[in-house]
Amino acid sequence: MEASSSESTYTEARPPQPETNKLRHFCKNAKTFLVDEFHPVFFAPVMGTSISANILYSFAFPARWLQICAYIMGTIALIIFIFACISFIWALLQRKGLWNRLHRDPKVAPFVGVMVMGYTALMMFLHSITRESWAWGLWVLWWIAGALSVYSAFVTVFLSLLAKHRNLKDSVDYRDISFTYLLPVVTLTVAASMGGNIAEDLSSTQAKIITAVVSFLMWAIAVFSASIITTVVYWRLFTHKIPGTAAVFTLFLPIGFLGQGAYGILIFGKNCVNLIMENHESVLSSPYTTFIHESAQKMENVGNVATMLSVSIMVCTTAAAMFLIAFGYFATFVAVASTLSKTRPFAKKPNLECVRDSKSPAMRYFDGLLRFNRGFWSMTFPLGTMAQANVELWRLFNGLKAFRYISAIYSVTLLGITIGCLFGICVRAIQMVMASAKTNSKESV
Image 1: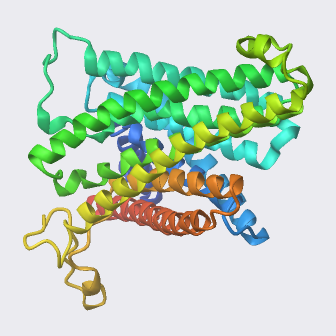
Image 2: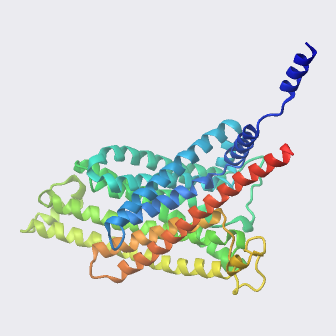
Image 3: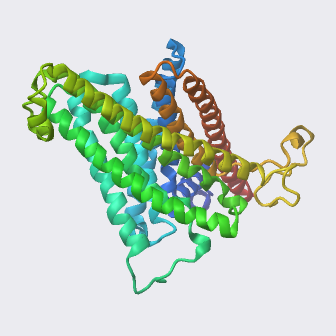
């Protein structure tokens, strides 16, 4: 009896199995990362991989193997999007005050735009691979993207950047003014571009016109608002110079609104021309062209009216697009030069917290370069939008071949950065698992 009782006591006091401890620590670390440390910037990889999938599928120099790579990249984007959504919902349920911070904290709220753009970019890739077969379903998803974009650009911007709150400082320090304020606004240009692409495949003329008009309104609001923010931030750059190493990648963000804005207005112009040419016989009697009814009736050839309208619209939209693309080139130079200025040999005293300083002989070639962080994803989407804008300009005007090659340069750079960022995420995940295993081994000892 005594032996059996002592044996049962030993069994009850037996420590848990190592496998159980490993799983427990891993789940604890995963919860800490996904819930306690959740930030809307978690959706940045969705933006980067989605725009990369779009670029691969419609590369300036198309190839079948590139489209296969696009499917792979799109699948990765979808997986990351699902995990990011789970993390977002889980964090909302577990963390009190998170919803309030997402709307009122000027350091967090602008990143809500990352969530919206990630969703919209993913839907754009879905449209690229389905086209007419899912046109109406994607049209519904576009309205959702448009509603989210309007909410982000209007409500989030007002509550976080303009409205006064009793428990928060009414003024924003000049050091906190950055291009991240563009994020909730640029969502409108992405939604406008998606609307333009979908309108092309709709079978109803009325739906095409509604989609084109709504898309243009979103584009106009975004470009005007983003221009104001860009002006303010460039004033800060002129007076206080480029930001610190930790925030230098934010200088890539204005490239996004410039490239996406150019791409969106080119799509709008193309859709208008197609609509006018497809319905040239009813141009004079259409309720959408009442401004030319009286003068056009005096013309013998109705086709001339449609041609003049088409040329006028295309000239205006192309001029606007080239204006944005040109400024995008300048913004690209500023962003790249600023980033290089933070690394060796250009930086005499680099920020040691942000640059690599390895003791390994094999890794010494990377010393002085910036360490991988979430900010690297800031480069992906803007570069992708410039690639889209340049290649679309070439497709509309085949004689402008230089833009095709410029698009290829932006595309290759984008894909290289995206692959590097995905590799960095994998390394961080492995490090988290290894840290969990080390913690478990120490406790077992």
